[in-house]
Image (cartoon, rainbow, N blue to C red; front, side, top):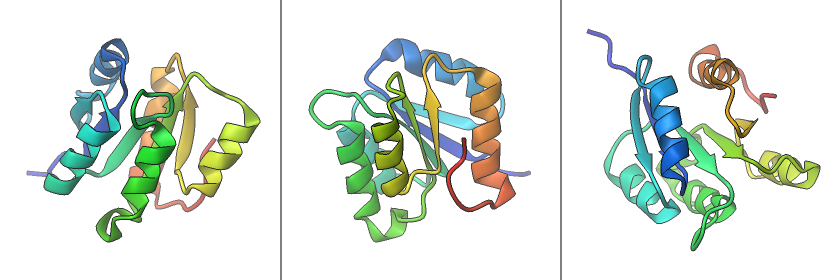
Length: 130
């Protein structure tokens, strides 16, 4: 039996997490948490294949969470796709410089999201995905 890939979504909105679960649970093992700190705890204890990360969260925003992920030796290569309502070029550039694998603007288009995830997990392509 082939193990499903596990996706961790970190977003402070329960509504967004439910939407992501509805899109992804048919194809992947899905886990959603509402804070960067909770996401880091999951990443310390479970194998995750890809992270969907909201930028605008209270306490620990997405960039702080991404920095904490990249500081862990075993997570440096973990694909992270940013999910956010913010599509400003400066944030996109900051995301690229932070080593994210992709950037998806909310509201999430399910086909676009699935395409980005598949490219990250299965195509073996390097670089930023638009």
